[in-house]
Amino acid sequence: MPQRNHQPPYKKQKRSNRRKKFKKSSDPTDDDSMEIPGFYYDQERDRYFKITPGHHFCSTNASGVEVKKQPERNVSTSTKPRIPTCNSLLNDRELNPFKTIHRLHSNSNFAREWREIFVKSLRYVGTIQQTIPFSLSHRITNFQIHPTSNELYFGNTDGMVGLLKFQASSKACSEIFSKPFAYCNSEITSIRIIGESLIIYTSLGNHLCSGILRIEHLPEVTDFDMVHEASACNYQTRSTVWTSTSSQVDEWIALGATKYVSVLSNYSVPGARFTNFKTNSDVFALDNDRYLPSAIFAGCRDGRLLLFDVRSSPKKTSPHGDGPMIKQSSPICNLKQVSGWYVLSDGMDGSLSLWDIRNQRRNQNTEESTLPVLKYYGHVNSTNRQTGFAVNSCNSIVAIAGQDNFVRFFSINTGNVVRMPIGPFEDTVSAIQFSERDEQPSYEFLPDGDNEHYIKGEGIWISIGKELQWWSVP
Image (tube, rainbow, N blue to C red; front, side):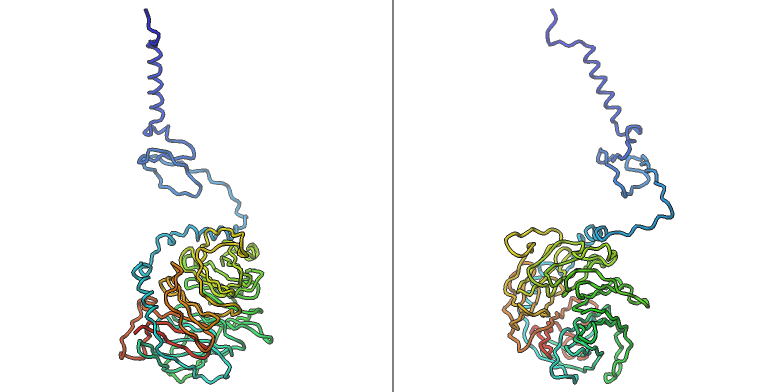
């Protein structure tokens, strides 16, 4: 009597044949089964991968089978080249491989701790009084130290740019000589040194003339009493110039002007002209992106932090920029990129904040439209646009001057106060700059007593009214 659960032999045989057939058709060693349009087979991973547009492969894959090329489209030779949008150009910044692999040795925990100890140990050493004869009411507005020599270039409220040769050590500081370098018709708002041979400076402008940009070659000083008479490239902006920045890689200079960012590209070529990116607000602060040399950060009077790309067309760029929508509740006075994704800025309401430009959270409870990653508490400011502001070479400490004439130091990573504020000073602190050994590894810092004309020292310079104070470690 037949059993109920017994299946006929032919059914079992048929199922076995089907398994063999399926196994044969899916065998990756079979050339016909591997030729799936739009896919390629990776023998090591034992799976198929989709071929995406713009992805390049070798002539053969891991299994030795050629990937079929897609037929090329017929493109008319008369078609105009497509101008990339700012969004597509800024994608290069997001995909920049140097952002993930770039690691500075100075960013180690040991280096950051050492820099905090360095700042805590700063002590007042001496003062250099500006001796160049000029009006009694002038004050230093900005200064820049040459990267490889002990030369300091400063500008003041009367429109003069001066050159100061100094020596500075842990025990003393003194002026070797000083002389006028150039004159403008209004207050000097920014000074930048490009490389080791070029200097740019800008003037604010007044009721008689608008702001200007000047580009000059730094002189090789052989006679200390010789007056500098080098020719300068003058660029009239037809606007007020609040600040400037420049690229150390490409030939462009950006100016913070009235309701736009003005960019001068290829400035070494005769006849170079400005390109204006509208912002609908005055630009008080600028900084260039270290990871994408064509990108510019702009801080505006209305509190917006904007991002522009100099390669894009101004006509196709929004006044809000093409980067993140970041806005604080007060005008941005200074800003600085401190890493690949973070920008530090201070406001005219006493705020000091760290922003992440990748993603911003909306804040519905306050006037700020976005929330920063970190806030630093203790900065004092309510009316001053031009306050001293500096970040050390490790991007770990920020020094900022307040309206109360104190200079405060904060840890960028934690937001903690590094040391007690220094001050109060007798006048407004307009500029601060760190002088550190790791800023220029090729520079030879000589010990005290060895060729005093080349001692640059390690510490911090602070401009107070007409004075330059030097603070160093004992």
